[in-house]
Image 1: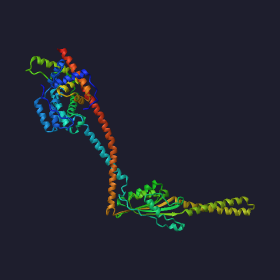
Image 2: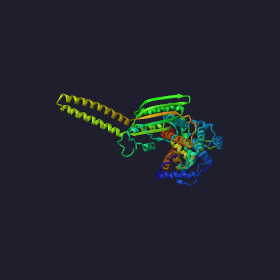
Image 3: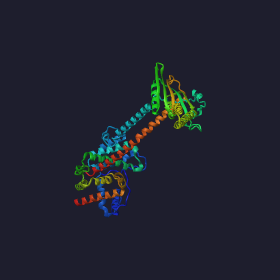
Image 4: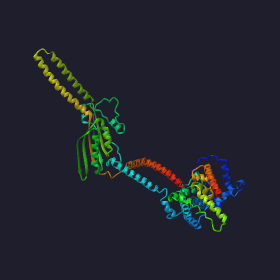
Length: 381
Length: 175
């Protein structure tokens, strides 16, 4: 039922076609075209008429809405369009597989112990014992609050070159069956950030399980570690301590520099010594200077290591009430999470279905073209 | 042999299948029988075409053509499928008297004339015979024939004229 653009007919052809049309319509024609008009009428008289019995049976079937199972219905099963049923079934199957795969991936990839609700974090900086030692400990409550609020790395102006000794204690609460998984995830995060597990202990009792981990993590990765670990389960508490050790570091460095300078001066004096007694005395002083340098170096190394590495203590405990009381916020968080998952599944499904649809449409278009050509060839036989 | 004029469904109106069936059934049969030249196959194909049209009636789009052209296009596809399936085109072409045989009570001269015409139709190329069937058996106009065959109306007219001309020359040679 396709149409094509038209072009004018040859006048003679048009005239004769008009004559045929007039003859078939029972209108007068030019006597010179009597032969053509007669042929048109004779051709019309050759029109085959259907058998009345068959016609009445078809009328009945048409009136009944062509119920399936008739002669035509059987032919139809093998006719065109039959491929659409398996194609549709295949597309549906693919869609189901994708949805199931995405759901499974979501269930395992996020960690079984991941809590749907994210509690308010208590990011308070506790006073540290070393504060008194340094004498000028910097309280970083404000900084910690900023970082917890999603402003990572923002520190007070003028403190960019300061050396901070940081450590933290994190308490997580997970469902009893998830404690071990959460612990494994904590260890995995630590290793992935270049840290080491100094010690780990997991104790399981009928009442629940508790894991205690002592971790050493590069200070530059401490915030990342805390961010990722607090996503693993409900956070019971989080304490971060930051002590400014810039002055002790600077002092240790100065001390080291002084010791080295003194040694150089003693070496120079030794070169200028004129008597044996003078040389012996200088050598003893140089030995003292060497010991002094070694001591200063060790002190400096210890301090810089405190600035470079952070101690993180993590406790993962069973939360017996995890499946118990839930407030409106928890339900809201769950609802948002479910909606997010559904949206993700739909997006992935769309990403699969659209290309498949395009391929099916292309195949259908090609198949239709092939079928059309084959049909036309039937008239060439 | 000629049947009463059929009722046409106004173009541009939503498809009323009953109207279409009543107005086209005999015409579709005549076209299919003229193309296949086998009355039993024509019955099957006509029934199949209307059943397909009935199942697809909601997909009919009046903007793409009349309901009449639509049902003839469906019938044509079914007829060509039948031709392909049975691979009887050549055999049928050699059996021109099958459908429109002269009845015993017709006069001898008329019977001879009908036989000659039927034989001439049978000698036509199947594509030409299809045009004859669409124009003279089914009563389609040039625009409708063009829509069914997927060609332009002028092309349909030219091809129809060529078929009629060939038929006329063939009959003249016989005479």
